[in-house]
Image 1 (cartoon, one colour):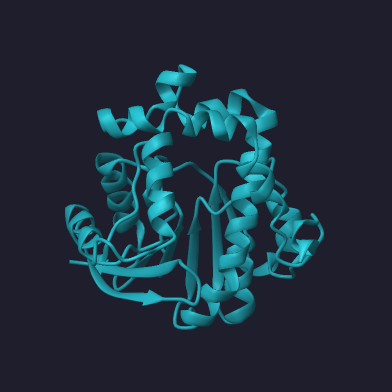
Image 2: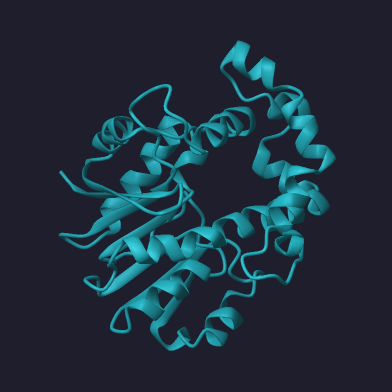
Length: 256
């Protein structure tokens, strides 16, 4: 049963286990009550800087955090690809998609599609070598760009995987508005997050993540109705929500 804790195990939980047990992670949670009382993230007050800045300024913990998030994200790839059909799209843009792990999976499942990987770290995270190793580099363009930089234009589908939930509403609306402007007519925005159940007391893994986001960055997980309200502010509407065997879902949106 402990094999999943090995770093080279299939679907390894090594990264997330090391993050959950890290002293810095526990110190963050020690200030959770303050976040509940104030309604504001407590990490900036504790660290004197925002969460993303702190990860950059503290590379040891930043590396642990990124590997932990990566190992959790890797468990979602197969359920997402099984639940959602990407083959109808000619060009799929993975917006701030890391080194391209998820995009490579999409291109394997959709051999006629082309991909665009956009991320501010593509020059240092080995994206080009990874996509070459996966055999999809000839169908993929790499763009260096952050969340609030110009969005690559001309995509039929824009993947935002664990992006929107990191931001308070004004920044989330700005990101979604920029994506809407960049996509082709008839295109789709695919928000991949843990969509919370409408029943307030129904159990869901996303509720713990929701508390963690409030603590760290002031972000949140949302219900389908809340996504509808958020998307409307960006000139978008929910077409459907596709559930997967994992806790993550796909919120498919189009232009209003």
